[in-house]
Length: 373
Image 1 (tube, rainbow, N blue to C red):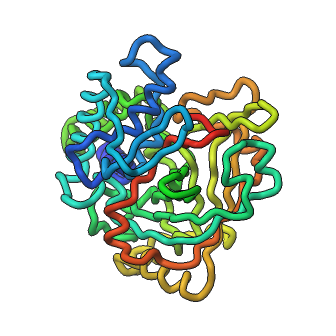
Image 2: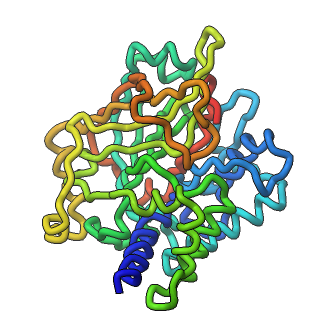
Image 3: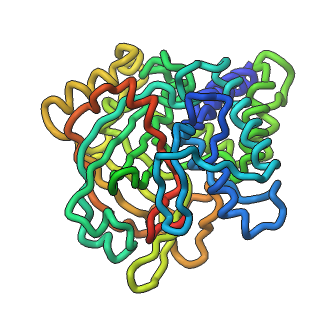
């Protein structure tokens, strides 16, 4: 009986962490940002099937609403459709990944993202720290302030998921857009746990398929038990605590992938973003969380921002020589230095939230000078 309970718990935990792709509301479209990031890193590997996987895109809202990538200037504009990769293997892998996410989410929910379907947008300003200019040439680090749009989300691909659902609501998602100019922007995407289950897209699909194939009442070891037994990083991700916060404003968020930052002197450093609440972390116990309403996090944010700005510190955890920078399952020691990047101050709920949710497309590729995937 104990073994069956363990299997059931693992399956529940996995359902609560594996609908990770904060993707397009059009389930048939290709989530191209991940393909491009995969291609950029895959240049170091001649075998496409084993390319390092930049899994930030599994948390991004990728929607082909229009836009074009100007690779020469590394800027993104929204006046044309984003060009698709011509790599047939990557296209097929993208389709397969989205289909698996839809299965995990119990089917397609038209008009919503396959994961992180339930979200809310706020607007505000970003103010860079004095130290950040030494890290990167990115333009928003060399301005007094930059307007931002931030999306908080529960993570399931089910729009009606309750905020206090212990399996479907967490880890929670965070995405911020820095509005650098007309149709020019750069984004940061993260989630509320400093971990990720797979290094490659193929590995993530295998993980999800094992979850789908598992019958917790069947014989052991079942599919998910076998997968987790052979993949320690996935087991860590599934079992790591994901407590429910008292507010999105009291939660921390972590970028999945590392980025290469280049400063004006030509020096480079790898780092990972962290977005940390100025108010500090605060979490609910199981009994207290169960007593909250299904929309308590979203209702609380509306009440909170009406009273005062919601503030987050943005930091970059810096890698040291020898640290792995191209594997999202490998996290760096907590004692690695953190450079102050700046502060986000959110001042209001974005007008026409449902419409803006349909429009905005968070992009894990930096697309600005001074920052590389």
